[in-house]
Image (cartoon, rainbow, N blue to C red):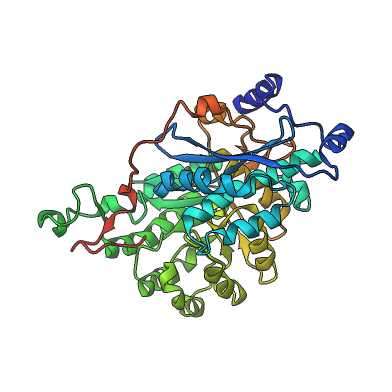
Length: 439
């Protein structure tokens, strides 16, 4: 209800002045014409209201009030993406026709010569999503209509249930079930159950940094089957259970553990292997029928073409801004459809509401949708991003305003500036002897 009130208030306040009703003749007459819609500026809008660096790209045009927003969030290199947008893409895009999304994407993609890196891909994503937002506003339609229309009434989501013990996780799963969720990801504490590990030897030896994290990989491997057993007994067969290994154990250990989970019928196990260990996928396929989701760390088509075509996993779970936006994500989804691989786009808290909206518009349009990571926006984020998607009864909904449907209160966004330095702590994980664990 809060979200709906904010959306109505935003409309009443004129925050969507360029959003006519779908199919409006005035919209068609004003925007769809032979004359180009020229890009006049591409700029970064960084904001960090909850300690998570979020980045939105704004594309301005020579048509009064016609602007677009796209997500370029990459918090591990947040300042670098801002520079890529303001110092490079702005100059590159000025004067180009905003209607020509594919041409702009392709030329921007090769403009740096070296490509498929996460910094430039995220900058490109912000540009691409903003151009789709503009295209929808020009057409007077939500983006999902431009992508082919709805295949479903809403986007089915999974929630995250954590806990310090299997019993606590089970109780949290029941709470999500009461809220209407049919899919729940279960994790024993943080990734790798790091809270179970004892003080490691590398800390005593003074190796690494004082705030580095650590995990006991063997203890984690023993506890996950117990976690599934406990949750299944407590919560029954009605709920679908997911789990994220997050690539934190050796490939053979991951394969062995996944085999042990078969009696509990996981909906999928996420990221069992790091991109560096892709060669183990045929072995994984031979040893288990548990569905696998993969791709959170992928940046390049070279990383997903062979696995999809050989059906090495069941869900493609790429982070849309990491591969360059809606345009390449739709190509991935279309490719995956022919190999019975479903989508499960990455949708964590460090994606802006604009990015979550982009995920959801694709989810509504592609036939081979699988599941979407749920999100819950704070009141502050809803005020910064009027029109954000929302979740009810386990389903995500987008509003039907033309474009992606999300506006940005720039004045409020800038009240939450980026910190001077990035926080790398969550990526710094070690074994007992101090060896770094990926990712």
